[in-house]
Image (cartoon, rainbow, N blue to C red; front, side):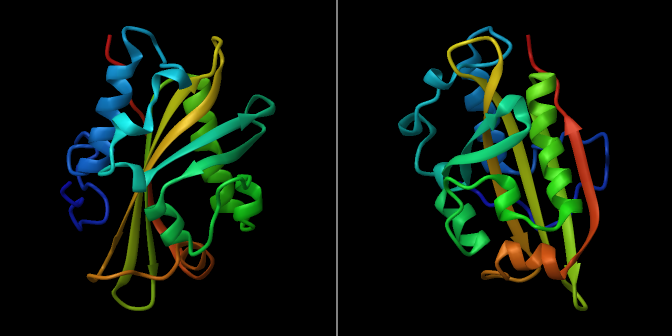
Length: 191
């Protein structure tokens, strides 16, 4: 699977957000196919075997708890765990992130996916030191779980650094860096 390009954020706001991120584009296509004409697919329609080894490292499955008051990581791909620097499976969002500004931003992305019953795309550019940056791109895809209400979110997340090789663990980046840019977009759902 091709890696996303190294540009921080798309410079043209009219440009579709997924067209330069092969991982997120493939995950969106998978979710869209699994809808089978419905507004939102059900959890039973999502099969990790079908998602495949090219996408799974960048995928998470998150429970919306108490109607979206909190979000708990049910399953988290290895690329995401590696960037966090520790295992986050089973943890609530507020147990992972202590810094309220960024945590609240991420929490709202999950809520948007649940409330709008539509994919939500987000990208954030973090900068620290001179010339050092990291971009993370996220795609939040709502799922029902045996009913009509959105109860889970299928998440794709990719990371880009300024230089080849790993960058600092994600949790350290958002504690030490300034989030300079962010993009948030609720994507249309195809009929």
